[in-house]
Image 1: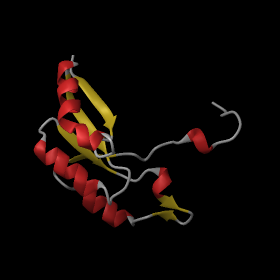
Image 2: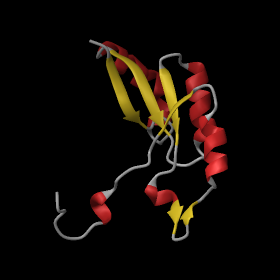
Image 3: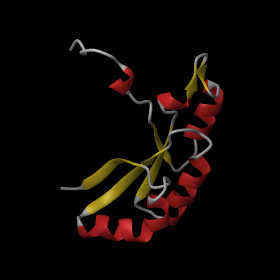
Image 4: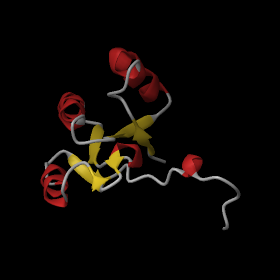
Length: 108
């Protein structure tokens, strides 16, 4: 069985300051790969640096709903596509469904 952490934010504080320890604990738990998820395109360069230094970490390019405006995305689709085309970006992610904004019961 290959274990993958499919959604982590290794660039967030306090995790970013403890990356060697986190990677050591992941290895001891047999986690072989990690997917570091960008919440906005401004943070992507830092994530790509983490990816460049760690062969078992991959990146997503994406925008979390908290990083949108009333008019839509912070960036246009062309910019998102350019970032997603980078070699170390393996997915478009953090397109999240954040139901914490919803009031009342969800109908599903």
